[in-house]
Amino acid sequence: MKVPLRFQITEYDCATTTLQNAISFLFKREEIPAEIVRTISLYTLDCYDNEGDIGEGGTSKAAMALMSSWIKNYANSHDFALKSEHYLNEDVNIDIITKCLKKNGCVVLRTYQKCEHYCLITEIDNDFVYLWDPYYIEEKYYDTDKLIEVVFDEPFKFNRKVAMSRFLSSTHNDFALGPIKNRECLCLYTKER
Image: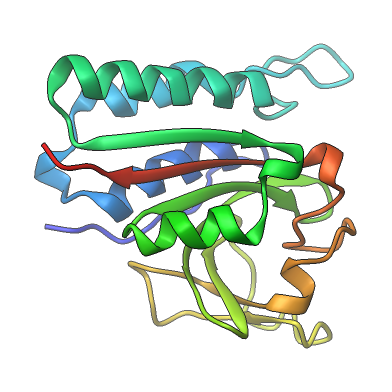
């Protein structure tokens, strides 16, 4: 049975929640090993904030790279049908994202929502990027931003439609790819056993 995608429970766990959502998007609940959920929780929330509080600085790119490597090793040693590819900077582009989605995958993307933020891309077409933003907001939150639409009736797929012009932007606007030097994504998809 598939389960609906979920929201983060703190201001900081967007990466944790998005990685768990990626696994939920790709697999049925009964197919997901507990060790994957445990490891996501262990490896994320590794950054300190300005006051020295662990986790309240979110999740680092190094932790995401480590998570990608762990997934590869786990999948190979446990015959688990999951593949992970970690990309940075100029390698994070519409072509690599589209390629992953065409393989029935999903993309954990480091983007922006007032600050650096992780979300899950699940679909794409010529006009929009469809993503699950783990940060719960009110329905009217983006009423003044015509490039983003809040969606409430696709709990297994996406809760935002982002115009391609916004997504491809190298700005710090919400859900933009952002400046090339800051880009990061994790492409996840099932593989043949």
